[in-house]
Length: 212
Image (tube, rainbow, N blue to C red; front, side, top):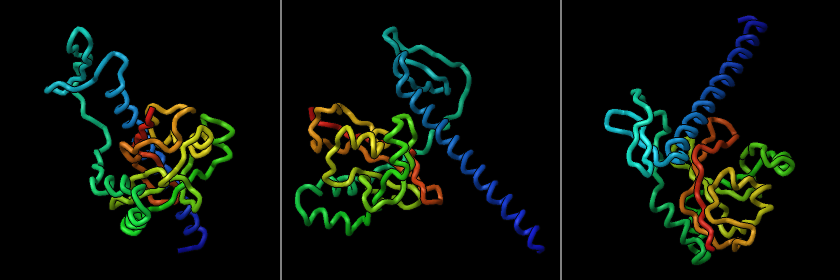
């Protein structure tokens, strides 16, 4: 194969990969938007009838809102291993429990790559990657996805929420600037995907509950 033909082929292949990644990310975004619509509808609880119709439960009862047949496009549910949650919650008990967790699960430390941009603009989308000083740890669940927790002992402050984009990874339940900075519990870890490269993308928000 001539060099110029090979270079053109590689260029087209690279562009095709970028387009496929963009299509995949768009699909994931649409699925998350649909999931949010089904769970957070302002008209009430949204669900499905046995015939595949969308409905909302209001004060007046069940009301069918869409007669059209539909097929769910939600992302498949990734169950959280109970032993992983138990091991993480045992970390504060002793140094041995922390060492046991790290030795068993070999978590990857993550941080915000575009931290300067995120600090300057609260609306900027954070880009996550491996970082020795990151405030998150990721435990792979077997494929490209991983369960993501706050780094053990992390003190959550308003500045950290902004600079480390914690609100883009977790739902911060009952959080306020006056909350106890380390008095919270991980109800559910976030789910991230590396999508075959060094960038980690949030697939599903986790949930941190702060003690009032």
